[in-house]
View 1 (cartoon, one colour):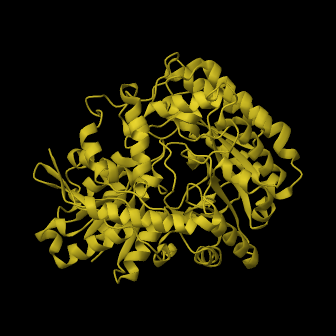
View 2: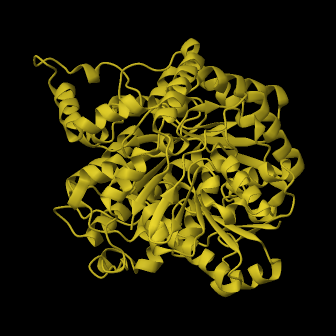
View 3: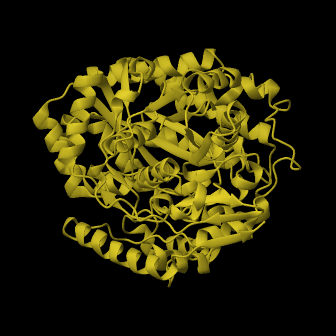
Amino acid sequence: MRVLLVHPNYHSGGAEIAGNWPPAWVAYLAGYLKAAGYTDVVFVDAMTNHLSEEEVRERIAEIRPDIVGSTAITPSIYKAERLLQIAKEVNPEIVTVLGGIHGTFMYPQVLKEAPWIDAVVRGEGEQVFLNFVKAVEDGSWGRDRSCVNGVAFLEGDKVIATPAEPPIKDLDRIKPDWGILDWDRYIYLPMGTRLAVPSFARGCPFTCSFCSQWKFWRDYRVRDPKAVVDEIEGLVKDHGVGFFILADEEPTIHRKKFIQFCELLIERNLPVLWGINTRVTDILRDEKLLPMFRKAGLIHVSLGTEAAAQLQLDRFNKETTIAQNKRAIQLLKDNGIVAEAQFIVGLENETAETLEETYQMAQDWKPDMANWCMYTPWPFSDLFQELGDKVQVFDFEKYNFVTPIMKPDTMERGELLDRVMNNYRRFYMRKAFLEWPWIGDKTRRKYMMGCLKAFAKSGFQRTFYDLGRVGYWGPQTKKSVDFKFADKAVRSRPDPEAIAAADEAWVTMHGPKIAMRRRKGEENARIALKLINNGPTGEAGPLRSAPMACGGGVEQIADEDAEDYAVKAAERFIEEAVQTSRRKEFVG
């Protein structure tokens, strides 16, 4: 049984400016298959190697696989669908499989627009895909496709989804095969070294309305810190990795295990630096631990500061305050850690004034780096449904954080892009000439100058923010920018009833919390704003007075409660799964 895994050739000029990112999904999936005895696994990275459709076709014909699997986030879905179509064109007997977050929730649409896909793996892929491969090999898939849990498929004109496979409780059972990657291809430009993206945890206990990680993984599980450090040591010693980024949205949530992780890295004294994404509130919580984090090799922290307007923070259920953002950035810099601020722009209420406000806040907060990301309403997120008719673009290939999906009420998309570029120009020109070359910390200075090199390279190549593709060359071209959105007759709004029905059967540990927020909808944002600005009796609102957790609430998960939280959540998850697990049918 030969399995071919292919990473689709999609590019957008976002995170790629830092280098080529190794597709960790391949290593974890291949390792899980090989541990079960399926050792004939081949990988083709069409993205990193910029393979054309014909080159992909040639590789598939040469490899002669029994199964071809690919993955897709929302912007890469069309590339993945086409890739699997090519596999069927090479040999109709090849079994085609799609995994990833987009197919997990959008499978009713995916299967109807790409009927050549034999199965969509929903959610966490390792166990589901292993069961699927076994079923294909022993013939049970051909006899009864409902024999595999956690998949969706077409049966005539109906889309069928089987009951979800339970999440893998012990993540350390997954032994990734990092050797399947061609490591010379994955270089982190700021440091000029090989890059890895290992996983520390899966899921999230919080439920930010713009995010979907909590929804995809369904349960929050943290790995044994020793197992993670063992894995990183192998990456460093066996594959020459010099920089890694933890794949988690917020690895610092489980404070006790994150501290253990850092202590073990210090103990091993590995020649590797690393970065994370995390929450402002976690940095404030761990102020006294930041020197230890830096000693463990943490050099770069990207903070979800999100938006300058407090209204936007509340809409996203983020609920950190402006003052907290500024304080967290300063704490990181004081401890020799590069601080990156993320701003979300491009909602319908964006104006020239709010965009300028984000720049002024960046100047006031003084982060080492700043990103202005176009708001991207994932079609399976709660916020997408709340926005309703305000979303008019359904060409998912452009859902990439650099293309303005939403059109602000007071400006055209070209002007929005131009003003964002103006923020970038002013911010990074100042950093390049007046700040980065004069940083006293040698390691931090080297890192920032490496980032400058990466920015300059993408700028000269016109790949930064996809500027070359859309035809932006400066303010003089803002009226002629063409984002090349597909016609609505080709890419139409997803069927909300089909997506809602798919979502309804998808049980997560967050059930009660989600139900409450969905009932309230936008009312939550209005109430939060009132409490922040005025309080119930006119005094300073209570949300101003205490750091708030991602997704709402004033309390963090205490160390002693973290394990108990996970156990109770798992118990609720299992109970709800038993009650709702059933075969779902959607009439086409």
